[in-house]
Image (cartoon, rainbow, N blue to C red; front, side, top):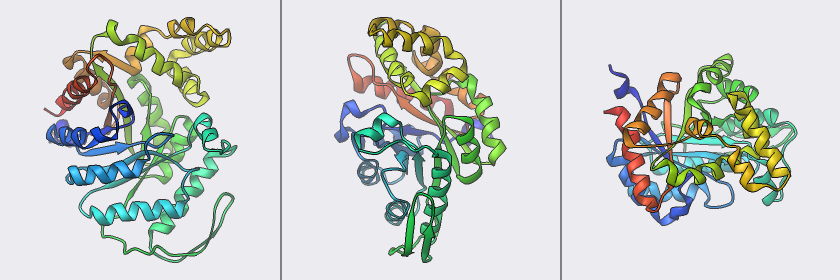
Length: 331
């Protein structure tokens, strides 16, 4: 069997908030028509993850539904189990991917929550408790982060049960995800760094290796500033900054942060090199985007998820062109 026929494709709404929630059914329908298997949503301070999946399930009942990710600090394990089982009951023939992550401190502060000082232990406990709740059996649990007393899922479980995905940026979380999850989700990672990430994942177990793949079918000179702004925002978050450093972009991160500390925003943006942009937020024509996507498969990603970057004067057109180009890896 060819690799193409074995490669599932996902698309995420994570970068498409600028198009608005009303665009979701149209995007999902376009993805289905192009051969995508799943639709992913995010949760930070904009749309919640689950409402959008309800819209997707109505517009395209053939697509698998996935969150990528929901912050574990915002939903209890029992609520996550209830939500996932409800989605599974409404879509019994589809795979429900429950993507979980430890959100960035800046996002958590907006929700009035402090970042955890033991994120690995918190994630381990969350996944274990969520699985117990998904079993349908009575659960009494006294952990370091959550407690339950005789909780029992009040909805009949399906023959197919939701799968757990853990988002990971550092080696410890990658190893944990490999051990406890059905899949691990990588994000903002260059293809050149996937092999190293895979080693950490495989040290934990055999979870499916997924990765968001950031790309835009657009003109580089026209949209490079948008790409720089996007990478700037992530490089200012410590978790992503450390991942960028480990991927070989330490000089860019240090210069960017130095310039920002001096309140030189233009200097900070200029510190992001074209090499860094094209390794993470690729911009090119359709054939180049397809080749970029293929590089992730060659590096070891088993389930690539397109994050179309809607940069350009016609955002919907860029999104559609990028969606089509990415799907070409299966043709």
